[in-house]
Length: 87
Image (cartoon, rainbow, N blue to C red; front, side, top):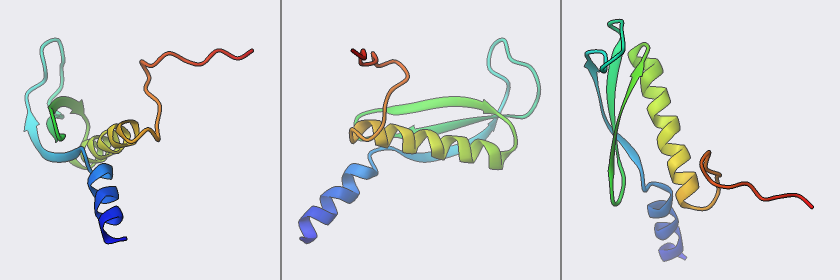
């Protein structure tokens, strides 16, 4: 039983927010309220930029990591995945 629980925990946490820092606007962007976030996974690192307060960007990054974990576990859909056709 303990092994299954440990495996479940590992599977759920494939992606996690590893850092958020104040950043200049990305190319083509304007404003001074930009942050760069880093999400690390078991096989990859994702770096993104988002605009807002530190609290807002932190929540966006956490939500994104949860969405990635759901997709990796087969619990969520992908925006890019083809949809099933209804008959």
